[in-house]
Structure formats: C-alpha cells, structure tokens
Image (cartoon, rainbow, N blue to C red; front, side, top):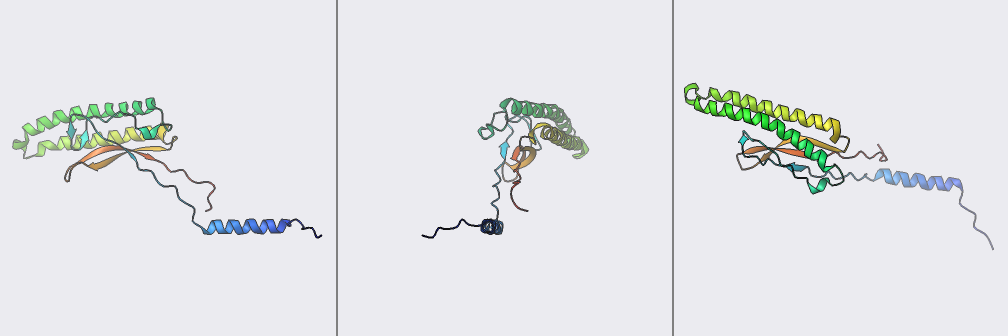
Length: 171
C-alpha cells in the first residue's frame, strides 16, 4: 500500500495566498451607519426654532453605551444654557414687538442676534461634551434642524454613533 505524503509547506502557502487574494478581491462589508438618536425640545417657549428645554429621558438604544447619569448631566448642562439664553431673548422679543411699529421692524434685530448667540453657546457646550466624554464612547452630539411643519423648522439634538474603523480590513 502506498501511503499519502503530507502536503508540503509550499502548498499551504499557495493556498493561503489564494484565499487572501480572493478575500481582497471581494469588497469588505462596511458597517451600516446607525440612525442618530433625535432628542426633541419639550419646553413651553420656542423662539426662532430653538426650544427652551430638551427631553431628559434616557433612550433605550443607549443602554450599555453611556451611563444614564452622564447623559442626564449633559442634558442638564444643555438645558441650563438654553434657560439663560431663552429668558433673555424672550424679554428682548417683548420689547422689540412693542417698538416694532416705530422702528419699522429693526427692533427685532437684537432678538435674532441673541438667537445666534444661543445657538453658538449650545454648539460650544456640545463640543465640550464631545471632547471630554462622548468621543471616547463612540458617540457624537450635534445640533440639527428638523422640519416640524412644511414651513417651520426647529432645532433638535442629534446623538450620532461614530463608526469603528475596521483595523483588520485591507487598505
């Protein structure tokens, strides 16, 4: 009886090269990007699309990604920034509306500028939170616009998932 000789090392290497070339010719499946979590405003006052308060309820999709205490602390900071800016903007809006007829609408410019300042302060707060905690957890806060009606837009908080870079995928 003839015994079969074990395959040589060269045949193993050629098989591995064939497998690697066939794997590299196929496209590496990209991870599907998850839809961002949208946190809408629930406050009583909305000025130029910016609500006075955002919902602090913990979304179920974040279980295991971030602690509920950290998320609630972030949302409290955001709501504090909004509270300060919306109260001041509301007072200026009331004064601007009283003087609107006399100034031909120019008295509303301070309210528009204050709204831009509030959005800037909110984006700075979100940037601070991203750099100190959320980028390490694979999350990213941003301020986005949502169409509430056909003509009205409102600002919402978006919590995106940062896709992980596949380290073992070929270049």
